[in-house]
Length: 302
Image (cartoon, rainbow, N blue to C red; front, side, top):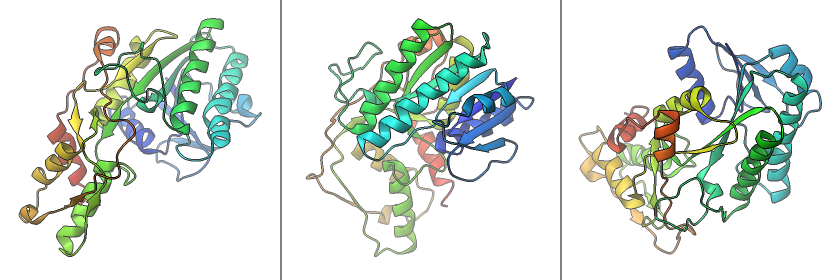
């Protein structure tokens, strides 16, 4: 089976490729990105998804599965719509011309599409009210994917990730930044560690569970449908930091300290996902606990 992964050298992409290589060693993997390093065992292509020659590349690769991970996180609304929405449209148009009825396309979404949910447990029918340009662009991308699924014969499945935890987390995310700063504080006790307000509630899923969710969606997902991939558990920022300190393997962890500045509050106070549809339809459920996920982050530092 041939896989094509867009944005393959990002955090999720690299983890999923390693997962595929371990669990499906006979799968052929190609990756498209506009930057970053090549990955061993993957046929790497450097291309913008908006490139009009994308069809030629799809014809060459001839994938059976496309995992669409490529996404721009920061920038102007104009840039985000170009790279997250219009580039996705170009991918769909190229896939139509490829004319491969058994092709399955998995579009990866984000809980940022939801913004402030109306209920304490957000399900797939939640009306998106994104609070930033990224969330808006991802919501438009998801809506575009649904439109193509319903108006063409393409098999397009959508999954929406909530917050992710795991090994080699980027420092742009709270848990990755916290472990990185605490590791520096262990080496130099004078290091100051400061966070914003930690009262917001989030839903964390281990990157290893994210990888099995992608597998499940490829196998069991229904075209046009959206599935929330989450733990379904509410975790405050303060509890996450406490868990990070508790799971630190260094004997000096009792010396770790930090400051929380309540002035820097998140616009979204609570965001927890209802994963019952993914459990029932995709036959997927998370395996890893919050402490186990945090332990895997510390492995890179201690």
